[in-house]
Length: 316
Image 1 (cartoon, rainbow, N blue to C red):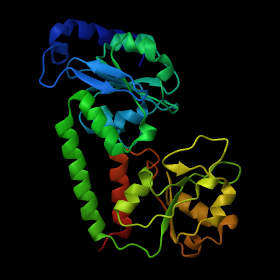
Image 2: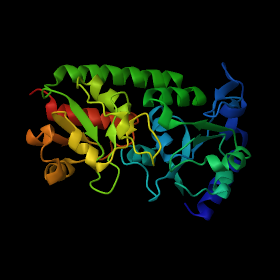
Image 3: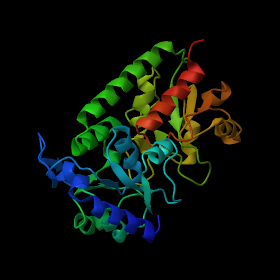
């Protein structure tokens, strides 16, 4: 969005006056609330926010899923929203704010938010500008890499007064997961999940207890858990994956492999890799893309993953 568009938004907000911000300034049961930040500090919100600015593209999907009043969101470094929820963002009129790693404080002021959500880490973190953003509006800092997407959804729901919506969303998803599991005919043996990048690059392998591992376990798969000794010493550890080297992939033993952020074309490339020819999953031809939007886990991407598994392994 250009500067003129931001100034127009600010002018419109000013013209609406107190009515535009009534739900924020008025008294509401259960408010004010003290919200815990990732660093142990607290943010106080006097009332449910009516204008939420998401400085993290990763957090935006969870806000949209519970119907939070998101007015603008940061994008990826390429200037895009995540594909799994971009249609919802367009329908809701969410404005593109700034690219990940590039903060525009003037834009934040112009939008007049009453809550700014910041990621504690990742390429889309605006944590370095936290103090400046706090002069615009209360700032909530969350570490999306340290919690399950369900917990993140619940935390954002409490911050925005959308607990009922979050509870319904999570209950519906749990029911759908159980229903889908009952329809599946899964291949025998274990499964693993690999972010396949080839030689000369890290090739993360999902942990059984990580976000993707828990999701596939919930669908009935038995996950192969990679040794933590495979973790690259030059990269930060993660609760979701072990950042293994390419050579470690030859030691995988599961009969089925899913490729993180992968498609069927990526699966074909994996099976054609001569270094990986002896893997059990390659020998059985059981290598599948988990979906191009499966890298970041939120409600929308988990739905895509579950639907994809159902299409591939569901009963007739």
